[in-house]
Length: 304
Length: 304
Image (cartoon, rainbow over all chains, first blue to last red; front, side, top):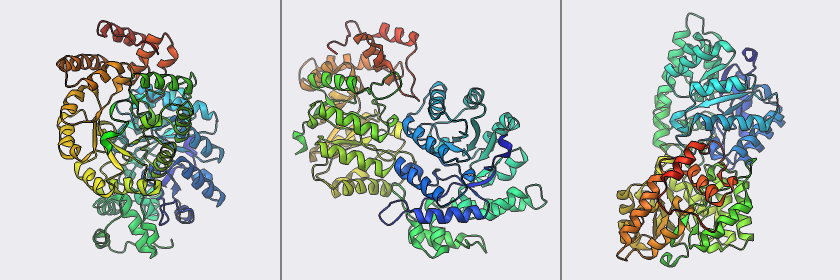
């Protein structure tokens, strides 16, 4: 059952480092991926935080190849493969499955708005049938504030009924506990893995039968989030959750992806990490200073 | 000056026909493109109406090659080349320029929302510099209700100042006359081509110094729209505009792209035209019957 998937736990939507001329920086991506795995965070490369939709399909294929060739464990990988174009999604998903990735995180096609559940069902169906591989495990990606294409419980129900072994779970990045709770109550008992898309809902999700969380903050604070995941039934769990929430509040005072990259750059003393691809922009020097000043006492990124 | 561009006039965001297994149907795309050109409509292939963002970059490159190889006039082509990923936009744009296309229609990167004008300026700048070709003519694509990433007048001003020969115009698909009028008043006198993204604003735009229109309806009614473009100073212009508006109202009673394809399928007696790619869905038989029943008396598509 999915309950035993190697993807349960804390998963980081890994930031994508770039070279000065904005090419994906393979060496640094391997480095942070290895660092995250050593802290028991899984890898959801090519997520929103990864600037994945600012990468061409060919760039993502090459990065995935590099991570696999570096010997990182494919069972702990959940690459994002959902694109606007059906054929792109199929190509990326097929590639991930052939590599043996534990799962894929799949946005719906997100250009057209107001599309029907019939159209979204057809999209996921076509991908599943074209990939045509029993190893495929799809984690649906619900992030309506960015994609502007929500995934309804009725659609999830329909996909689960049609592809029960393949549709394995969901990342709910709505930030809305009622949404996450609804998914947990309706689907978690059926072995469907529900991940809130933020560490701030980790404790609540675990109490409701969640699978862990997929958390941007995990890029800079994996050990603490993993500690709460493992110890959510311990007496100090609420205090741990409060500490994660406090860091989240600091990070959200800035553009999140640029802030995460700036923190890695600061603590590694390697400014190359700070580069983002347009349309994102890096933090200004003033923003970076304000971010550092606002960090909780003792916060640091070590060993990267 | 851009005032003399071969792209002035009525431009159709050409529907993309698909084969039964959802591959782009090159033969039918060439056929409708030739039919549109014969009625003096230019070709904005790979627009929103073209389901362009449901196509992989490689599929778009192959379609553009096929249209050029078919001998269609490149000066009358304005392919959509704006993708989420910088590298995709550069690849498509470079290809279009090398073919000699009259211009390209460029969406901003549309996955990330709430991005800054600095980030959007950096996106367009990087593309222009990487393409690095004096022949490049960019028509900006403002369609906030779909892209969710609006292009502000301040951004346009900044792009025009930095790249005065290259940033050639805009398609404003907001549907908001105040927006189109604002662009006309501020930019049209500088040789910047302003196209409303619908034929319902054609007469008003021409009176305000517009360059024509880029119109989904042109896929099924090009001659009438071209007639108004040519005759906008004639006494019957308002009546012509009213006829276009009436057809638009009928079309908007249905999902627009599916409705256009259903009309072509009906009048050519060739149902292959009706196929859409997910996440879109075709009209039901009931919808198609209702659409046909609602058409203005005498409406037909002939010669395709």
